[in-house]
Length: 210
Ligand SMILES: [Fe+2]
Ligand SMILES: [Fe+2]
Image (cartoon, rainbow, N blue to C red):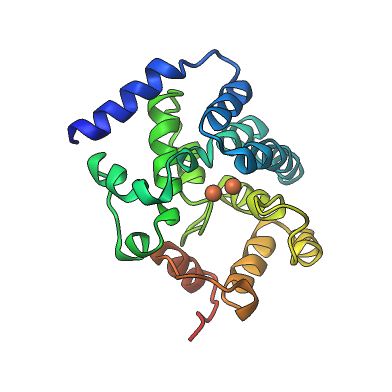
């Protein structure tokens, strides 16, 4: 790790020391970085995650923690995120170099671990794969993935909302399969398929777009 990554982490610790109220801390972090859209998205998404967790027998506290922390990487501008991830020695794949916003989940894991002291690897994994899912998702991974899509960060109700909700009625896996399939459709207008998304498509038997 180079000086830039070290400096970024220590300035976060200095300027945003955890108070013990995770929701308030995360809210303050987004506010200080001018991330109003994400600031509004995260509590809505966390509420959906807890509801989905209770409904599907997943630990609601783990779901709440992962949900509150899932978009922390979004405090860094997309123009700077690739260099920062490299300075933190995070692996950066070609797809992430081309669409840097795909890196925000990896960066969220760093902040969750190092600023908020999250050590539970199941929570960190759910944060890490919230955008794309992956080949062998746990129920917690799927709760976070689905809550993020149901309560998206684009404002208003997502165009797929009713269809996804009805798929989720069939269980987490059915919901995840429906959304992964939607991501492969022209309607999703996907910028680039991340390798983790490709792995999820393969695992769920979904044909990737041409
Ligand atoms: Fe995200
Ligand atoms: Fe999100």
